[in-house]
Length: 438
Ligand code: TYD
Ligand code: MG
Image 1: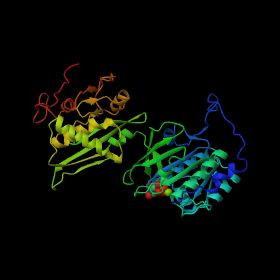
Image 2: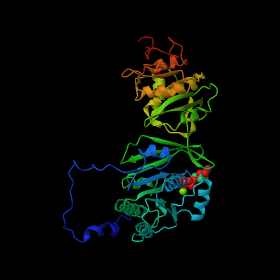
Image 3: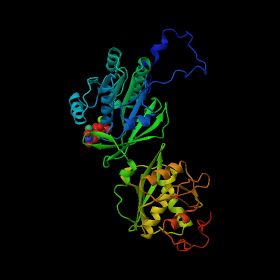
Image 4: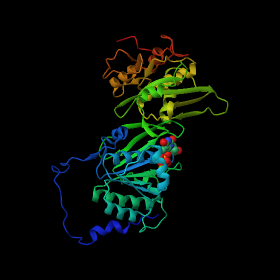
């Protein structure tokens, strides 16, 4: 592997190895507040925690074609319009191609300068001379450090180029944004090998087949990582989705078995998403279990709980679940809506359109409360949901729409999937409903 350090790393300290360095007291460190530059795109600022920190190095990763170049060009244009000088290094595309995209998204700021260049030393020299406020490099996989061996895109090259950019960013206070492609084959020299080197890592999620694109922070030295930005790719670039919950539920117009609304939370924002399940007779030897957008382990656990605690059998069926709109839900709060969707699909009974759910389901079949239940209820009610099923023994939401379910069987009864008193085909020894008390 090409792991040898570039000469650039050592040149700073070689002159006078014994000079003492300045040390800081903990009390004074961090006294000067970080200066932020608003990106001009609210959804991006939300993910960053209020804009780019001046002099920080930000990596934007994602699969080819997801919209990284489009987003950065939009950001560059907004920054340019607000008076920031932007140097846009295009290694992947010609200025001509960028120009075509710029016209498509109505970007024409005078302050955005294009530099078609692959050599990172030339980029550095140009930055030192031009002193832009913001540097964009699209992409790190095409950049090349002449002092290093290896082809552009190799681990050694992307690391060396990133280290060099980090030094430029800190030396000159240039806010630097770099694009990194994630490859399907496990990201050989993709953004993952750079995550530890940069200040902030943003990932573009979603698939090219769906209109929605989600930007999520995987690492943020200057803020939280929970917030997401939701975009839609349109004819003129990416735009924020006004009411993501409403858009995500737009396709639900009639009651269909296997569809349940989940009230999820991304960062601090509640979001209504549709969890879908399909249960079909198994045709092969091995029943299929396939989850898209939900962690496989969660899905299998919920399935097992339904089988052993609610007496439902999926043994001779293929079972598929997914999150509508191509979204990913990593929260444990998906358990309960997932259980309802699975039961609904198996029994062929639809859950009412004005019902939603959230909550973690333990192996015992009990429903556990999750965070932010109050704001989940509020978001749901705001979008016309009349009943929200969840657990609330610690801090019960006062919302009138909230219906408490202590066990998954309770929840199935509240949703009308199992008659009260009757809980699953063979009930003996299984969790009974306790929803009547309190
Ligand atoms: P792009 O930003 O080039 O993706 P990346 O840099 O991540 O590889 O473009 C993503 C896709 O979006 C591309 O197939 C073309 C499409 N697109 C639109 O639909 N509308 C637009 O306004 C633009 C600029 C691109
Ligand atoms: Mg691109």
